[in-house]
Image (cartoon, rainbow, N blue to C red; front, side, top):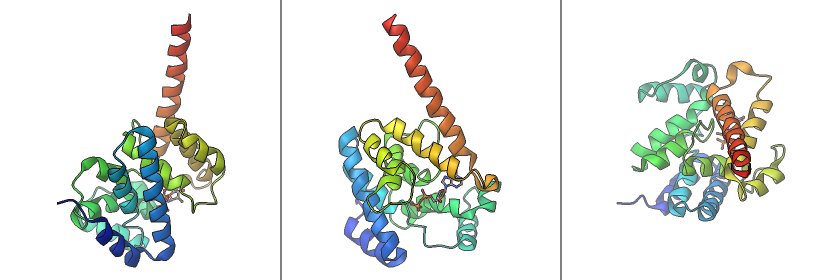
Length: 202
Ligand SMILES: Nc1ncnc2c1ncn2[C@@H]1O[C@H](COP(=O)(O)OP(=O)(O)O)[C@@H](O)[C@H]1O
């Protein structure tokens, strides 16, 4: 049976508190809009958006404790910065407490904070929606990235990663290297595409 969205919303509303719940709704609706734009299933995108922060209510010590209890792999960086674990633990809870079995939705939740190289369309949609949803106001270049998201999704992913790494540069011990690897992956991809276009033109 498909997970019931109204029940999920009801649960999240109580678990997350009103501010985080508003953000969650913003990510869900923005994800379904991006899904319509890029030819992805909008219901999957909405569900991924709804559940992306379903472990966000826990403090750092609870995140670490629960991740170890559920035998999730915890890296040295995640031990230093357990807030990163809300994504991995969120994917686990989405599967085991909210009965989401679609592995693409679970991966989109798992990688919504760090991103990763060669992301699937759904992963990119949730990653970007988390950054641009209407309630966000702090990030630099937000207006530019909001417009870009509906024109060139890969570029939007890359710009978000570059801005996130720039924001985190004063806290090198907290940085999960996956974002750096992903940023390099997309930069290389753009360079390769430009080279191919040039070759096709000559
Ligand atoms: N690679 C990374 N290493 C460490 N922190 C990161 C990394 N990528 C993002 N973050 C930080 O994680 C925090 C939460 O991000 P995110 O999960 O996207 O937001 P939210 O859960 O609030 O929707 C942000 O402060 C962001 O700067």
